[in-house]
Image 1: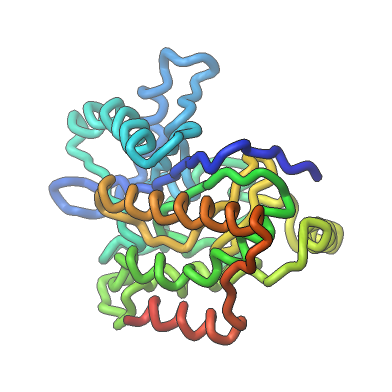
Image 2: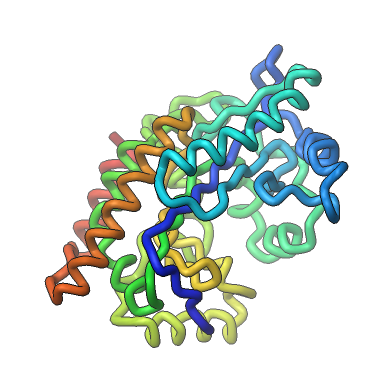
Length: 292
């Protein structure tokens, strides 16, 4: 497994949206017809920055490789401008919160996709109820070794970023008492949660090879830690955030992520220690962020 090095701390942002009926506020499974129209004139019928998600009531909008948050914001906004007329004429809109306040996952159709169908068949109920939305931020790093060390250090700030983005107090029309119900729903999946503290790239590769050979995962895409190295993109990916309602707030999180990764890169080059907490402190702090 090779790590595709990124020369700088560039960023990429992925935002998951729910498709809602403006008259009722409910989620509606209309992603395929929107994407089909959006991609009708594109090669292969594929849009490079708007994609299906697990459920047909969801869309994911992603950026390319961006130098800074302002560029990422402009990138996301351009794709959303393409999508908006297709939503408007159908009386639909997009929302990005960790959970929809009253929608029910039961009966919500899964996107017809071999990977999604295989995942739901293998994992069953925990996967079938993933009617949740989040924001992921990728930040470029220069090597696999640095990606693992950066993941370890970023975990220190994981609860802070989660606390800044909690947006899912409701689930199936009930007040859960949590700031982020999405966090606890997603933690029901295997290979999720706070990333294990690893000693380097070789240990990371051994962990993934073991999971694949044991049949626990099919590909590295199924390691859904809150923060993870992403070898294909040459990044570290921060995945703890609930859906974020505005692009301005989304870019705040992207800026924090880019600044932290840049700082850790400089500390490593200078031979300085990186921040870190014991696992029990991280678990407790993540719970406090999720609850309060």
